[in-house]
Image: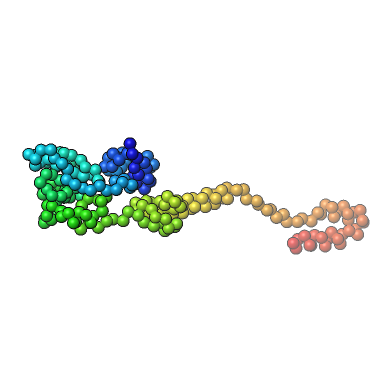
Length: 245
């Protein structure tokens, strides 16, 4: 089976998968995120949207619908309404039944969706309007294609518009996420500084004791006796100096 390139709408990774993946619900093998409806493959040319061939012309209520560029059906009108109520069929998906000259957006069918605009456009979309719309998006009147990519402000690489982190340079490009990371970094630095301050406070402090010098009177007394009083003036001078200090 031919493997086509699909872009994950969550992480923008390119994966190889069969064509049947389009419109299905499955997990991305790269980021493990659940993708509700896989978009059209990147490397498949859009086929011409032609009304399907209905075997019996006596069944005007048999409907067909498109998921991307993949045709689904036939289904009854009741089944079509059930798909719309469950959200499987979106207002921008194309629908067709026998007798209609062209595919139309499901939002144009009166009563198919709970909320309809007050004034509906014509039920049939002219062929000229269908031709000018991008093949990967359903036919809509006044459709303006959304930007799918943006430029990384750090490395100038083109990334997905939904990417929060640049896959090339690894920088966070989502403003809210980057602000949260910066706040977390500052909080961690403050915790490290407080931890270092507590560690310094727990270190034993070196206390220097200053002892006041004292005069050795006993020694001076012995010297005075041995010198028969000659050492007495020295004793007196030493005692005065010690007291002065």
